[in-house]
Each structure stands twice: as C-alpha cells, then as structure tokens.
Picture 1: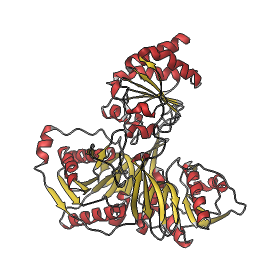
Picture 2: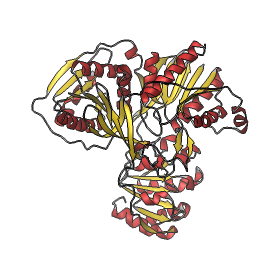
Picture 3: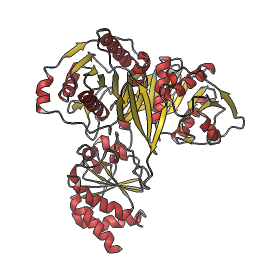
Picture 4: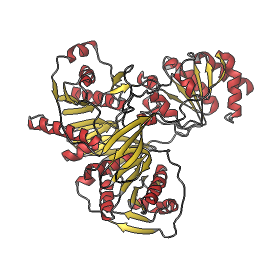
Length: 321
Length: 255
C-alpha cells in the first residue's frame, strides 16, 4: 500500500495534502495496491470527510495522549510504525514545510533515502522521479531506491482530483512514542492579528526592486497599492538593503505570491524572484532596461522609469475617479 | 557557546540556468558562487550569538576544493575556524553528505570540541533536499527545529520561532540542539575589509571523507517547459499610464 501523511494545523488541512493524495492514488493504481492516509492528532478527526473523496481505502486516525500539538519526530514515528506494520511500498507527504520536515524525520529514523518535491513518479524496483530544483527552475530526473520509497509531492504540480471509494474504513492507531520523539513540539503560539490583505492573498501585488533605489522610493508604490487595494512587495535586493522588511520579500526565500496581477517595478528578474511570482496570473513589468530578463517572463511591459510611470498611473486613476 | 554552521557552495544564479553538456549539472562557466540566503543568516546568527556569549564559531562545508572560497567568506564575516570536507566529482546525495558531517562532528567532539548548537539552512539553494539537518540531528541524538526565523538562547534552553500563516509557533528545546534557518532571521552584514584580511589567518582544516552512496541518484537535469512568454509592450515612460489603467480595467481590478 501507499501511505500518505496528511498535513494539517490544529485540524485545518494543508491544501497540498489533497494534491499529494491524488499522486498517491495514481501510484497505488500503478502498483496494484491501496492508498491509505495518516491523520495525526485528536484535532484532525474533523478532516476525515475532507480526505475521503480522494480515493483513500483506509484512514488511520493516530491519537496519543501527548500528541496535542504538532511534533515532527512524533508524527514521523507514527508514520514509520504504520508503514512497517502495513507493509508500505512508499510513504508520501506534501512538499510543504511540515510535510518535508516530517518525511525527513521518517528518512532519518529509517535510514531510507528521500526525494523531496517530486512532480512525477514512476514506480518499479527503483522509482524514477522528477523533482524540482532551484525552487522549480530546473527539473531533476533521479532514481530512488530503498525498501520503502519516501517522497514529498511538490506543491501545485498535481491537480487534486476526487475519486471516491465506497468502502473507506477508518482505523484507530496509537503509536509507541519515546521521550526523544516528543522533545520538539510546539510549546506556544504568538498569533498576530490579521491585517486583512496579505502578500499571499492580495489580488494585486506591486513589487519593487533595485530600481526603486531607497526605502523612501517605495512611497510611489504604496500610493499605487492603496488606490488598487493591493499590497507592496519587494525583491531580495529591496529586503537585503533594508528598504523593506523581509516579510515583504517575494521570492524563493520569501513569500510565493499568486495575485491576479503582479506589477513588478525596477526588478530585473533573477531566478530567486521569478520563483516567487510564478503563481501570478498576469505580470506587468516596468523597467528602464528593455533587455531585463523579466520582460521575457511577463505578459505586459512598460519601458520606463518607475519613478515617472507609477505616479502617472496614480494620477490617471485619480482623473478617472 | 560552540556553534557549527554547515553551508553549501552553489552557483550564484542569474535569470536562467544553463546546463552542462552531459545534463548532470549547471553550466557554471559564466557564474560566480555563493551560499544560500538561509545559510548566510545562519552564519550571521552564529557570529552574533558568539559576540554575546563567547565561544567559537566553526563553519563547515562538504564540497569541491574551490568551496574554500565560501568558507573564507564566512571567516571574513566573523566565524573563527573552517572545516572543508573535500570531495571530487559530482555532488553527494543527502545520506552520504549527512553521514560525512556526522563523522566530522564526532571527530571534533573526540578532540574536545563539542558543539552546543549546529546550524543548517532550511534547504540548499540548488538541490533543495530538505533533510540534511534532520538526518544529522537524529544520528547525534539531538533535537532539531527546522525553518526558524527567530532564536533566543537563555541558560541551556533554546527558543526557536517558526513563521506560520497566523503568526509564529514557538519551540523550546534543550541544548545541544540542531536548527535549520530561513532568511529573515536577521540581516547579514557584509564582510569588513579587516575581516577579509584576517580570514586567511584563521584555522582551516581539510580532509577527504568517504562514505557509501545513498539511495537517491541524480540522472539528468532539464529545463521546465513554457519558460518564455510573448510580452506585450504597452508603451514607454509615463505616456503608457492610460494603457496601464485600461489594462487594470480589463482585468477588473479597479474598485
């Protein structure tokens, strides 16, 4: 069987878990086995109905008196014990922060190889996988061996498709956990009040890079963001120079955005940045350099100085009321 | 506090990655090299902790002889000592890499240099395996917190903060421990001229590890499809403003 670890946070499912299950179901069909899912923690009970439509044959509800919040090594131990007991061919997790973390613990505990962020998987004695490198700028074909194949599924490379089975069973499982498994556990949360529009959820993101030139230079971008109900982001150059806080960074090591429109101002288009705005539906680039690589990844372009173009757009918007 | 920071030499990418002829690596003939932003923050944090608490900061990499350049850069930024686990040929898989690092940590401990904290980047910039730190922690029997953007050490306890959608989740672990860091943890300094001058005088240890191959073997790299787009140029300079507003209107992004 193929075992999928469902990622959730206190009962809120991570959407990429369903993409992972879809790839897992495909793998189960190809290997002539079943797809089974692991749901860890009491607060995950409500998620059974969310994952049932995705072709799982069995849901393992894992509970333990000390599993009251996320604990990566303990989650991994539960998956290892289930995987061994059920003769898993492969253990899958979503390629999210937690998914990759739990799977890395599974790998470390078992001494098995792990392939992170796989987009395609071809089973066999040795699995052939295609995984993402450089934040998806390159594809790597690799061979993965081991008694149990460990792979995480790259987010948004598989579309989650329902395929309900009528015979889904739910089984309870209590793992045996050691102190070491529970040493690392969420001990506290500092939750910041949500301020409405965020980089992740905004419909319009206005990005600024080297061409903005200074922290003050972002004022024109703020003005445009305000008139569009959008939000300002920055390239790594902007955050590294201290013009914007790191939380504003759009990029491989910052936030991945997915707005309807991304307006990139004075950003050349380095891989670090392109990876972060890949999810944008449309991209408008404003840059003085017509040869900037970003133009070849954009839908629309304006050749010009953002310090002139952006205020002109704000003025034009005002004129139209 | 004795701190080990593990880094990886990677190409400093431009806008497009070109491949070598055998399609097994990136063509680096026109590229410089660097370490990942996550690792730069780990180095900076280690230097800051040692400035406060005293101790020794050791930077380690497993890579080709040329990775000396990245170690010297970390020494210039304030680390005290460097270890190069020198390998030849293609990069090692995650299991082999982790084994070699564990071997080095054990040798250091045997020589009386036990670490209180071992730091990694959350994932390497190039291969993005997401596992070396966790593997090393398990082999050494240490707790591991990954993807952190905040560290607070008091007494023998480390408090680590990790960003989540709703704010922060906080972990408390006893030292010694392993953490993997993310960019945003701090704003790394640039090396000073004095730091750069002094880097070459700091202790630098080279050795050649040997370990069996792991179970993940790279076969071939390729470019993902549909990279290029046909851009529609709306105009030049501020004169393009009306066209931009028309576009916003067409996309139904106005009020």
